[in-house]
Length: 120
Image: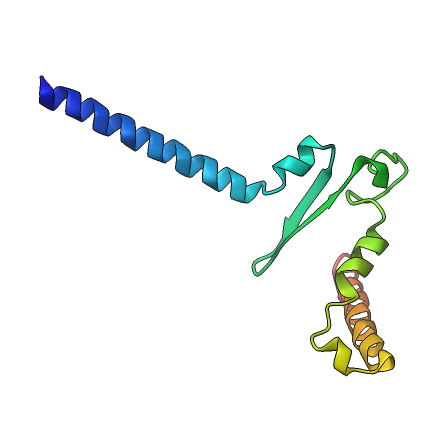
């Protein structure tokens, strides 16, 4: 009788641990649940080497039906990610810092051109 009860208890513990692991994985996949409850929207994307999550509140324009992108005000989002991302930016002159930003934007432009040419 005790062995059967112990077996049931062991299975119950295993199931609880498994469910807790599933909950932990879901929290990692959807890290901003509190913000979503407060009305924030979220877009997640990535590739082989990185993942990006952009979150915004309802007042930021997510209800704008004429917005062509899944992320509203995308130019501002890209600017927010880019500006300030240079390592040791305080050691650079403003011209040097912004030249680095322009290099990234030019590289992005060239990547878009390459992608587009593969469809033509």
